[in-house]
Structure formats: structure tokens, C-alpha cells
Length: 464
Image (cartoon, rainbow, N blue to C red; front, side):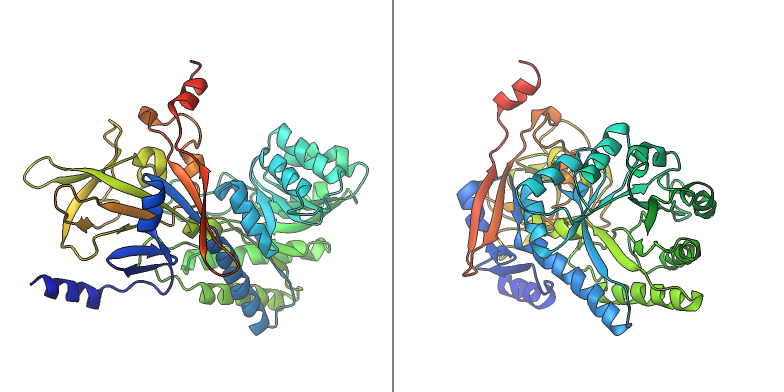
């Protein structure tokens, strides 16, 4: 009977083409034997598989460049990394191996870019698209970069008052600008219009009445971003259509305008059944931009994207050990992890985000339905099965047998949202973080990026 069960699982469970496979009843992640990593470093453990960052960038570049070739598109494609997805040095260093550019969201992104230029990872020709609502320290840092010779720093206006902050620059030299279009969100979104950007009905008049009067200001780029990301929906295509037409309207009176930034939004796989057609979406975006521009008699723009989660999300994973199995009543079986969801995977409870969850070992065992709970005393510290529309099944192990699980494609946002290096809920320590790379022979290598957070470091933060 047991063999029949294993045969059935083998016949019906298909992994995607890349990322996961099982050998000797243990899970491999991008060819990395996770049980070997656990044996070396223990759990809980965050891992970052660096080659995945480069492969994702190259995928997107290929999709857009092929789409442009097929459409005989005259503009260029520029890949920007959205730094807020993960600011870690190892992420930026890996990403920048791939001839990319950068997008910032706040003032303290700028010192990071300065450091990258100092150590030779970038030069002063790099495009730096400066997004977000900007306080004075942010605009000051932007101007200092421009004064210091960064040739392609483009502050993207979030509102019409922001322009005045750059007067010390444009009063004496050329200033390149972008304008963010306030997107119309989906009708089922909490707010129908984005809080970010300038209303599309105001942009043309604003350009004519304010910007056009100053010959030192060049509007080079229009930017828009849809909260739901890039999706094959009537809503997305309608918004893209509206923004392309606005680009054409502005281009007729603003000849220096030459670029359209369609933001980020390529999704990452959050389940093994994810089937987003990246190639089709890139083809259709390029085709629609070219078609509308041709109809309007406008030269098609250069296309910028700002992929963040797509760049770094699938490189990350977090591994937990099951500390204890607890049966709280006749129906509910709890598996307690050796860390906390609130502190290590805040998206799972903050926005009910689903991640790929798989057992690391015991793939030959019978599976049972369980609930997953974290170590804190907070009632929300569990993996919300209701939000993912399915139940969690994990191997049924004998008492004393170690069971390990992994959450995968967790590489974006979790450290910053969880307050990396700071004070965690119930003072649960941040886990170890290990970086995995491959050498010139294709052999994987590991190095410890951060030890598990210590009581001493937390007490220092707390003033003891």
C-alpha cells in the first residue's frame, strides 16, 4: 500500500522546469541540496541563491529585446532594479553584473548609489530614476549627485510643487526630469486613484504653463505604475493605452521627451502552478506601444522597467525546523516552527501573501494536514491557510524524527518589512543568513552573511 502511495505521488506531482527537484527523498533548490545546508548551518536559516538574480535579469532583457526585434521597434530597452525590494550589498553587486540601471524610492538610497560608484560597481553614466514623494533631504541628495557629474540622474516629479526644489540646478544648468502619472486603480481597490503622481488631465497644462518656460528643464521620461502589477487584464491594457496616448500628446509639444517608464510588476512564482506568460506580455506591451505611436505619428519611446521583486524574489528562501507537533483538539494539528512568521515572513500575515511551501526532507512519507504556528505569543503568528485557499500538508514523521520545511521565493521585501537587525516581536532573533553562489566550475559555494541575532545586540538597541 505504501509503495502505491509513493508511486501515485511520483506520477501526479510535477515540479516546474527549474528551481526544484527531489533526490534521495530530500529537496533541492536550484540544484542545492538543502539538507546539506541545514546540516552545516542549522535552522532557522535564510538563504540567498545569487545566480538566480542574474538569470532573472537576463530573462527579462531577452523577452523585451526579442519583442522589440519582432516588432521592428526603434527604441531601446533599459532594465532598472528597484532597490527598495532589497537593499543588501550582495543583491546590488550581483544585479550590477548584468549591465543594469537603478531606481530609488527614498533619500537613503542615494548614499548606497554613492558607495557603489566609489567601489567601481557603477559609473556616473548610470541611469538613476528617483521616484517617490520627496522630502528636502532626498531632493538635496539628488542635486548633489547631479552637481558631482552623474549624467543620467532623473528625478521623477511626484507632484507639481516638487519642481521648485531643483531650482539651484536648473537656474544654472540643464536638468533632466521625469513625470509620474497618477494611475487609476482597479475599481475594487480601496482607493480608486493612486496617491502618487500627477493627474493625467493636469500634466499637459502643467508642462505648458510652468516647465516649458524654462529652457534648462528637459522632460525626458513619463512614468506610470499599476498597483496590481503587469497583468493580462482589460484594466491593465486600458491603463497602458491611456498612458501611451498621454505620452504622444506630450511628445508633440515636448520634443526632448523620449522615454516611457512602465514601472515594475512582473510577478514571481508564488505556487508551483504559476503560469504567467512573460514572453507574451513583453510582446504585447511592445506591440501596443508601437501601434499607438504609429497611429499618432510619434516616434516610439525608449522603454524603461523597474523590476524589483522579479529581480530578487525567487533567489530567496527561509528554512525552518519543526520544533514540536501539537494536537490541540480532535481536528487541529499544529506544527510549531523554530522561529516566527511575524518576524521572518511579515508578508504572510501583513498582506496574506502566499509563498511556495515544501517539505525539505521525508518525501517518501505519508502526508497529513497540519497548521503551522510561530514562536511568539501573538495569535496572528501562523501561516494563514484561509488566505492561500488551500490546506498545508506535510510528511507524517515518527516522534524524534527531524522535519524541515522551506518557504521559497521570499527574497523581496521581507527583511526590510521585518526590521532586519532591529527589535523583533517577542525578541525573536533574526535567523542566520547564508549566501549561495557557484564558482567557475559550477560547484556551489556558501558563506555566512549574518549570524543569528544575539541578545547582546538587542539589549544595546534597547538601551541596556
